[in-house]
Image (cartoon, rainbow, N blue to C red; front, side, top):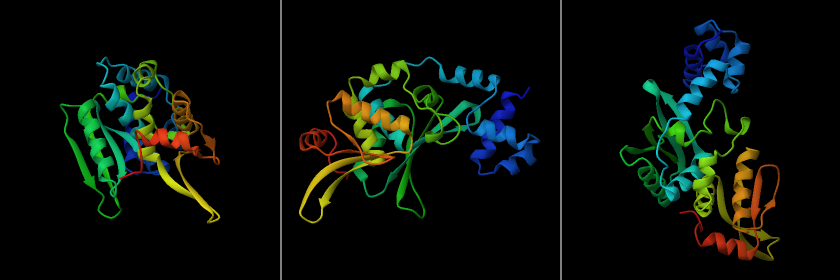
Length: 247
């Protein structure tokens, strides 16, 4: 039987950039097993260990800040595991939107008031990483797991749904600020109108977005496989009251 320590070592090596062959040579674990683990199918011992981490008892975070931060996390956020069960929340944001960056920092500080929040500019590309360390991130974001979000199931926990039900506008705001936009749609040069678009490869995350729209009575349409649009004038006006153009 494989141990939890072996699973964690494989995950750590994968995060460091090693491919399956390199991890197999370093650990002596078959490539097929490594491939299975890294796509999220973990042995029972590792699943139980993860469950113990994720069900750690913590107070509910401030609902408004959490809803916005959760939307950002679903779009452009991730967790990385560090020694002593410390996790780092990272959120990648475009450098040209300083107000969104400031809103992200403020939300993290509200959710984790005792923890330092840092903003690091990428040395080459035009984006920043906003990050913060805490042992409690996996408890707040149990959607964390091995592999890309669109390759694993993303579902709300009951306590998350309870917090978000009165903060649907902030959830949508976070989702649009991460993986959405407000753009002007032009039709053959004859007329134009504003619309909101949301794009994500995860069908579960798109369902969270469209479900939030449904809660507010906002009509949406499926543009193509990965993109959802809100185009009706009244619905765009409603979103404008709490989102508006990115800046």
